Length: 318
Image (cartoon, rainbow, N blue to C red; front, side, top):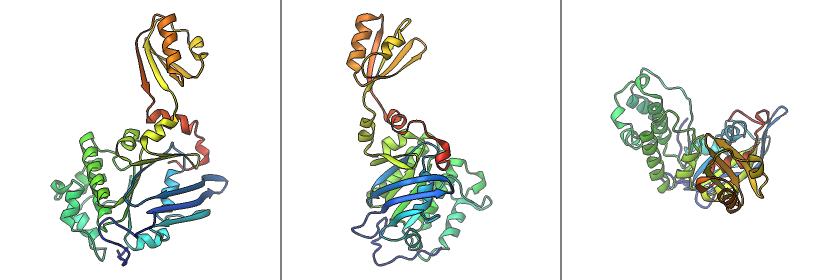
């Protein structure tokens, strides 16, 4: 693929002014009788970092494939930087970091990046890309000797070569240790600060909560939540009451108004409820409960609450 920069590409990490980085309108995708995507409307603005979350079978990978031009919608329209996906990619506006992808094991890290750079008409500087991906110190290491996390950062470096306006990441930190993940996201944040748009799919909910400006939650081929981490968490109404208790009456607790679920873990009980005060009053006044804690529900709670039991036959495996 040759990188061709049009006069509407404004430089590092930028795209066509005045249009969304990604726009989906009424997008569906069917595979025979399987409805992987069931009608998605979505705008992602330039410079946003957006997490694309959902259980297996939700339609995440199918949607990303369509944004990358790897497949076409059954119905609906997709634009990337105001262009058809394949056109935007041909203009060097889009790069992707996937979980897997062919890397030549016998080349060094720097040789790999230099070889890929030779395939583009214009690219970022090889040494600069290695530094931005945090692998400058690995330049002379054979790819086959790199860990899974290091190879993932090499894929990130390759994606930065055409200086894309839109960067799509599929499980980008798989195989990275905690320090590597933090350094990776610092690099992503720095890039986004210069105007680059980032859309990433991840199973690490804490990554989405910590690093995304916005979370789009999909289930069974549809968007079920779209907002900041705080806004999405607020959709899982209620709080969790935890207490240490002897022989809890779970039926009585479950019968209290607004109680969603009751769990027993060892000598502790966890009650998810919309009216946490009522639960706390019952525990304090009518049981031997002690060490009572009340916490807001987190992104995982919202994820489970909003996606429910996902039918794996209704979408792809991502």
